[in-house]
Image (cartoon, rainbow, N blue to C red; front, side, top):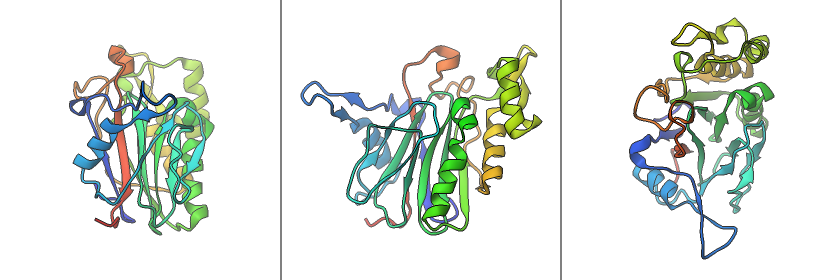
Length: 235
């Protein structure tokens, strides 16, 4: 999916398998991210756009900017930002949380993992702010598959916390009529607050679609991925 500004995003589903980087027995401390790289290649990432960069996600608001010539994979954080001119692929992994691709009009781009705790901690705002601080004057965003309110019963107290930050639009109802978090609406509200423009993404519930890994619905251990890269990367 091409976003305004030039970045390209692709989301996997469970047909691509579990895309989590795995520890290797031969090289302690080094993770094997070959499955993630294979998905990126099959999604249309040009050969010149390497490496695939990923984070140790912690449901927070940490933003990692990829420095030229370095691969910060395995660093702790929940958003990756690549400045204009970067020939890397950014990846975040999910199994119900939101995954947001960002595209700056200066050629910068980002991938953001958005759970409800990261959302309330400000991960969306911080990622958009990082693109703007780097030179973008407009930022476009797209949201991928995530859990929808019918499958996301939520405690009233925690729902109040989210609603105080993003408004009543985040209040939904679960399939049994109880209070639920509308995560897509909450992410959209956070993007609007940050000044980003939400474009069409992939509107699918990970819990009930049958196509995606879901920790909440099935306690799946696998993870799908969002990958984002610069559309002008050299082939």
